[in-house]
Length: 304
Image (tube, rainbow, N blue to C red; front, side, top):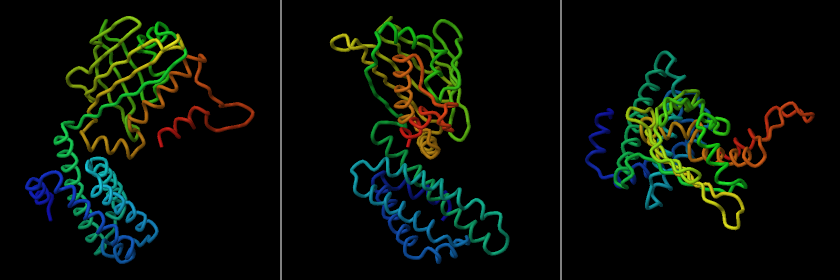
């Protein structure tokens, strides 16, 4: 079946019918991968790796059960998109083969690409049906043992944000209200955008939004509220962003461990450490001979 045929099929189905169909497809494919991994590998023209194929089968069954058992199957459909990308990556080396095996791999790759298109379309339809339009909303808070004035003063120096935000490469001031942001994307890529400060209440609130044409459409705010009993400041952060290429961009970012939902948790804990101690604790070069810093290990743990 061609990609156009997959697209026409998807348009005739509503998002939940399509999701259920993909759920049953996942379970059927997963059972085949679990029960007959060698036969399936021969069918698609790749070398048999039973353990790997069975692991892929477990992934498919898990996704299928998640889609069929949840009233909101969005995360599980997105998990299928990530799995499709992994499958295409595994099939890519086999495309270099010659002869009949290559023809089988080409057919299998075409089929996976068609299913990927269905998964992406289903994910987008679910997002639209839920009124999210592909946007992601994040909200988090934590208490920092410093005054609102100190935290506001530091945060207002946007050029210093990369000191604790690992995903930020740089922030450059353009004028009184606008800044140019450069961030690290998945797989060593970079994204850039200009943003403007839309609200600035000294020691209370900073809010911003990206300017039209940004690689990443985003908006956010940070509030500085004095904690009860003068025990520091409650820092409240809200973010809204549209990933590059929408849902598929988010899925790719998750695959490479760059999900902003996890990044923000790491960044704010690093900010807390920086403001309370004056530095982010590291252990490079100490007698213990560790190859990575404590903070780096903490970052990796939170992300995963």
